[in-house]
Figure 1 (cartoon, rainbow, N blue to C red):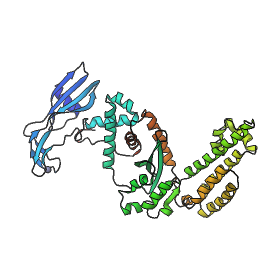
Figure 2 (figure 1 turned 135 degrees about the vertical axis):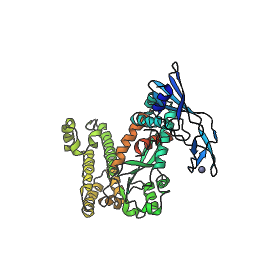
Figure 3 (figure 1 turned 90 degrees about the vertical axis):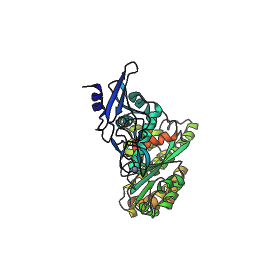
Figure 4 (figure 1 turned 180 degrees about the vertical axis):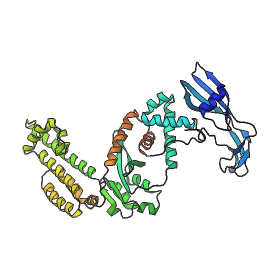
Length: 414
Ligand SMILES: [Zn+2]
């Protein structure tokens, strides 16, 4: 077999394309392959498909292709152009690459698989591409996936903030709670951030949203009220966020009490921070004895912890009426606890109670978001720092967007 024929097969080139010439450059470890087509070949207008004669050729272009063993492999061609009566002079579609790409579709498919499995740095090494090329391929894959994505409005949405750059800046993430995908990312955590998700939606699409899980965050509440018809019955204040508020209150009580005890030479609470974050049944065995002992002392922290643990029960009811009665008892207990941080959270929940209790109509939580958050945390770490926020957003969509990222490989067996 001649090397040109071999490369036609290796590249998967189909009619009318053939390989004209192959050059092997051993010192540079590269193979260059020139493709050609027969004269008299007719071409389709890329816009309307009209069957046309060749008009001329554009300048030679080069595409990075899959390696030939250890050799970097480049495909060269002069793209044919046609003159369509309707669309004027146009370059025809080439079967091996998307328009304007510097990589063949097969190379892009491989790059996407590598980028999914490793970080940007690893991808640059494995694929022998630059950092910018890796980001470019990732951004292209995301754009492709977003273009191909059918209009789909989730019935159950979650919205949450994500701190970046040491908590100085935030992103707003809108999540499809059923598919566990990030649907939309916006800058900041303002009303406008969340509202930007709704802007392209039709009134019917907005009405199809059945429930929205979120923290008791006024900006998000306002945005949901402005855009989701019947939001008053659809907003569900997420139990994990509510429990996080309680967790912080317990920790504040502990810090204050620890400071007071310590001033009197009492080290009872030293090193106990993490014990109070556990749910009762989850305290690790090694710490159980100490935890029981701490609970037997009449500590403010112990009372705050008991209030927190009892609040959990709220979400185990199946009927709103029972949950409401439980809440009333808990609220009296909490507000009489003389633990200011706990009283503060109890009042915060009370102000928002109607949309805490919507949980019993829509038992949704942002637990999915928490799962995605830890995935995003990994992305952030693996990326060895993001040069900019746009890169970070691209990576979130790439890994968590549930998008169809691959280019089509028309005419090439993919
Ligand atoms: Zn045309």
